[in-house]
Length: 370
Ligand SMILES: C[S@@+](CC[C@H](N)C(=O)[O-])C[C@H]1O[C@@H](n2cnc3c(N)ncnc32)[C@H](O)[C@@H]1O
Ligand SMILES: *[C@@H]1O[C@H](CO)[C@@H](O)[C@H](O)[C@H]1NC(C)=O
Ligand SMILES: CC(=O)N[C@H]1CO[C@H](CO)[C@@H](O)[C@@H]1O
Image (cartoon, rainbow, N blue to C red):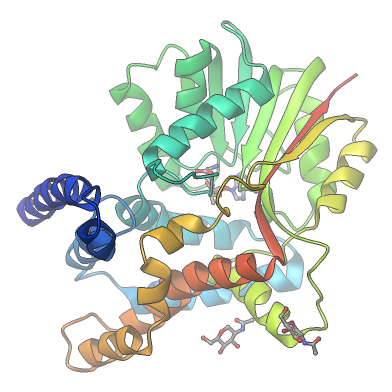
C-alpha cells in the first residue's frame, strides 16, 4: 500500500516534469521514451507494471491460468463463454485498472492530446451518439467498472444502469458510483446480456462498448438489447471487429486474430456485417456508422505506440528477463505464462493486427427502434 502510493507519487511528479521537458526544442523529442518509463502508476507505463508486480507478488497465477484455459475450451466447445468471462474479469478487472486506468477500450487520440483527455472526449462523443438527455433511462451492458456509464450520466444528466457478470466488477463499479455521488442516478446490476433481467421497453437508450466481442451468439445479444429498448430509442455499439482485409486463410492474420481471442477468453471476433445482420433481424433500423479513427485521428491502437509499451513488450529481452525472474523465484510461479498470454499477447497482437488493417477498434454503430 505504502509502496504503491510512493510509486504513484514518484510517477506523477516525474511525469509532470517530463511533460515540461519534452516541450523543449531539440532535447524534448529525445526525452519522450522516458515518459513511458516514468509514466503515471495507473496508466500504460513501466511504473504501473512495477506497481502491478508488487501488488500481485503472492497471487496464484498457476490456478488462474489453469482455469482460464479450461474455461476457454468450454467456450469453444459450447459457445458459452460466461464462465471464462467471469474467471477472467474476477482477476483482470483490477489488473487492467492498475496498468491501464479505468479505460478498457481504445479511443481516437490526436497529437499532443493525452490519453485521459482522449477518453474524456470519447465520453462526449458517446453522449452525442446516444443523444442522451436529462431524465432519460440508459442501459450500459457489459459495463466493467462502469466508467463510461458514470461519465455519460455526469455529462448528460441521464440515469444509467450498468449490466455485467463478474462480481468483482459489480462491487467495484458500485463503489465508484458512490464515490462519485451518483447513487441516485446510477447502479450496476448482475446479468448476462444474452438474457437481460429487464422487462420489454425499459430504456430510452442502450449501449455497449467492447463487450459484444464476448458473445458467440450476436443475434441473441442484439435482439435482447432491442427488446429492452423503448420504441423510438437508440442502440449504440462501439466494438472491436475484423475488417474486409482479414483473410482467415492467411497464417499471419489468423495468428494475431486467434491470439487476441484466446488471451482474453473470447470467441472469434465478428465483422461489421454480422452486427448489421443481427440488428436488422432484431427489427432495428440503421441510423449511422462511423469509424472514429479515420485520419487525421491516430490509429485506435496508438496508445500502445506512443508510450513505447508495444516495443518494450515485443522485445525478447523483456520476455527472457521475466522468464529468468520466475526461474530464480523473484516472480511467482506461472507468472511468465500469465505475462505472455494476458499482457504481451493482447498488447502486441492488437498493435500488429491494427497495423495490418485486419482489425478495427473504433467503429461506432447506431440503430433506432421503430
Ligand atoms: C473489455 S470489457 C469492457 C468494459 C467497458 N465496456 C469498457 O469499455 O471499459 C468487457 C466487459 O463485457 C462484460 N461481459 C462479457 N460478456 C458478457 C455477458 N454475456 N453479459 C454481460 N456482460 C458481459 C465483461 O464482464 C466486461 O465487463
Ligand atoms: C499474409 O498476410 C501478410 C500481411 O498482411 C502478407 O504480407 C502475406 O503476403 C500474406 N500471405 C499470403 C500467403 O497471402
Ligand atoms: C491460437 C493461439 O493461441 N495461437 C498462438 C498464440 O501465440 C503463441 C505464441 O506465444 C502460440 O504458441 C499459439 O499457438
